[in-house]
Every structure is written in structure tokens, then in C-alpha cells.
Length: 181
Image 1 (spheres, rainbow, N blue to C red):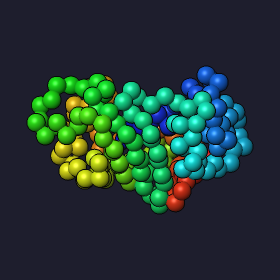
Image 2 (image 1 turned 45 degrees about the horizontal axis):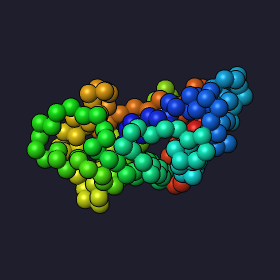
Image 3 (image 1 turned 90 degrees about the horizontal axis):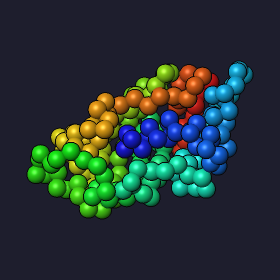
Image 4 (image 1 turned 60 degrees about the vertical axis):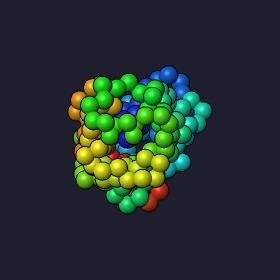
């Protein structure tokens, strides 16, 4: 989940530079990154975030990840994706319970926004579901160690997402994230 959120937070400039089509709210964030004040707050709707990953000129998701949908609720970012774990690079399986993370599954995750002050928002993953079943935190930690941390050692259930340049904070509310300048 963290990798997917980071793709949104950090990848805006790369898509714009590559000539990809961005939803208007995301294009405005890119514009603010390359200009001087004055700025105004920008609301990124759930639909804008989804279009970023699925619309024309969409950013590429990691191999094995598809059908990503993001949603904002007061103080929480939720994500849902279809993940083919057999296509993800991974370290050797140490825990036999990690066999759950093989094949194709629907994965849902909720991350609570702990802080949203610049330079980065801090989030904590509170729930992960695999095909509708809640996964215990200890198994989430083990899966992160095998699937994510070999390539991204600083990623855990609590993580930071950089805010766009010049942003002072972000507010997560129902149906949108507002970037404050």
C-alpha cells in the first residue's frame, strides 16, 4: 500500500515531464512546483487519484499490481488493488504463513493519517484485508519484510509520504485530499 501511495505523491512530475495527461488538480500541483507564489489550496478527488493510475497517460503500477482504487475518508486513505503476488520480486519465504501471499488476490488497506504537516505526511496502516479477510499485524510485518523491504528498507506499517513542493500541509476528508499552500 505504501508503495502505491508513494507513486502518487512522488510520481506527478515524472508523468508531466513524460507528456502524460494529468487530471486538472494534479496538473495544478505540478505547475505550483515550478512556479513562485501565490498558490492556492488544491483538492484531489478520489476520481482524480484513480484517473492518475488508470486514465489516459496513467502512471505505471508495479508489475503484478492492477485495478488500483483509492478513497479518502476523514483522516484515512483507503486503497484496493488486485495483486498477483507471483509477479512481485521477493526475498525467500521464511514464515510458512506467507504462502497466503501467493497467487492473485484482492487486497484492501486503510492507512490513518497521523500527521500531515510539511515536509511529509505520516501514515500508519491500520488494516489490511486479503480477499476480504483481515490479516494480523504480525503477518503484515512479515509480508513487508519479504515483499517490500528488500527493495525499500524504510517501508513499514508506519511511513512518510512527501508533500508536493511549497505545500504546508494536507487534509484528508471524505472523497478528497486537500493540499494546502
